[in-house]
Image (tube, rainbow, N blue to C red):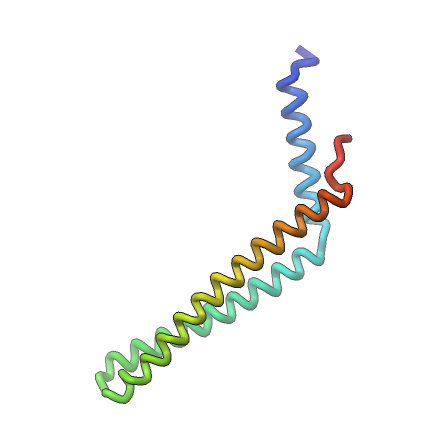
Length: 111
């Protein structure tokens, strides 16, 4: 039972999982980049909140000129949503690349 292949595989998997976690947790550059990117996303989302409030106010006013302004505001909202999707996609890609790069540089050891 001490040489159970299943137990050995579980120990190796757990060991790799701990190494993976240490690689990411121990890299301040990765966290700084993620923090910067999340702040960019939050900035766009904050802008979207303000745009939505303005669109709602314009709509409730029922003033024709305000309704016309909503077209541009909604177009900006649409562009911002695309920007958020792109930022999250880039973050995911960069995080994944960094993670894989660390493993290809010898961080994925079978100790």
